[in-house]
Image (cartoon, rainbow, N blue to C red; front, side):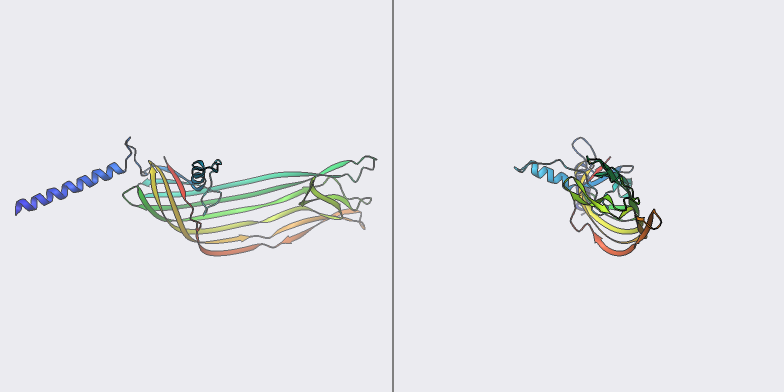
Length: 290
């Protein structure tokens, strides 16, 4: 009886050892590389759909366009990364610092020139926008195979604002209370539409947007290669956004006082609060660990 019990223990030990060896082999490549992330690893996470679309078209007769790197749907235009303190815990961060300035010009008839040949001058519009988003959180991981599950929470802060400034080649005068002015909102055959105007925009100022939010998330990923995985993530969160008042500034000729006058018209701000799920489109994520 004793020998039978001892034999069972030996068999169980051997099976456990064999299982551990098999699992160890499964989590390493033929070159001995670990499939799963480890302590002190960093990770970059992007949208995998452009790459999958490229691969699918490459294997078909429709032709393949070059893939573009995109941010996750639940954090548009952000750069996302992770830092692992162990194989089961990681800090997550996302960052967007956007500052865009663009200028467009348009030719119009010069009102101050009365020569036989038409003389032109130019109007311009300069647009500036700023968008800053910062996110920080953590995730915990489960699973002992190349299929991993994870869950966690993160919060974000968002600040955005911008506006436009206009400059014009024609100035209002007592001789020209109406001048050729560009309408930068209307496209014409030779640029933007323009016409004689007695009043025009010189500046728009959007209210500053301030946002706060937090989300809980869970996801799964499978390591197709060492330290490279495909996965999907869903989340549920709350967010609050508030946009301050802005203004639009116009100018016109004041014939009574023989001067150009300017006046601000307020633009009402807004606020919103929401509770909802995200990434309902079923986005697939591609993660690189190094």
